Length: 190
Image 1 (cartoon, rainbow, N blue to C red):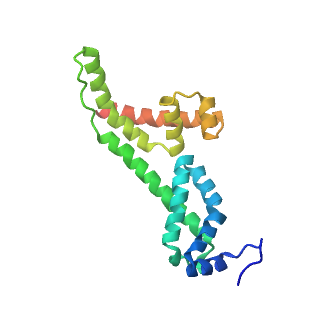
Image 2: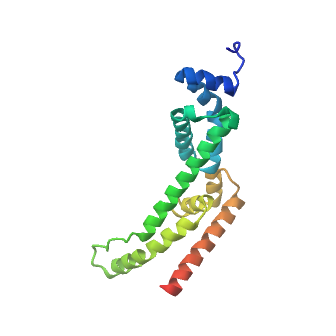
Image 3: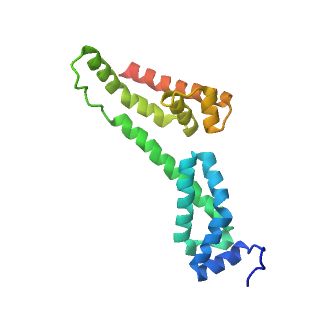
């Protein structure tokens, strides 16, 4: 059964077609990539969204025989795959920051007293800072990094992330509070 020109086949028909001819899976991509990309971009940055959206369709293609139309449509199945990939991405990012918190900096090679004091202080602070970064939400971490590393203003951060300057301020405030709580806790116990 084929659709007339301009008529879109149903998901069930499309599944039946791509099971007979895997080249038809490109229609799944064409039909749903934008939805998946926009969903992932809303949860992560645009570069990660491109990667994860592409990976979603790669996994869906590899697992195309596992799709069960009785459990829902292709679109929902793809959203499920994308959600799992977003969660995996976030776990990987959190592990990265936890690993940084356990790393020690090598002492500075310079003999100047200020360099030594700065190096020792940085070495002692790095695990706490990385631990604090791991506790932040993605939004809080993005805002903090853009302000601290990118040296962007609230307005610039808002524009870069597509959020309001007020949201930038509240995320930065929450991030600072979390940082202070961890740093203060470590100072008392350390």
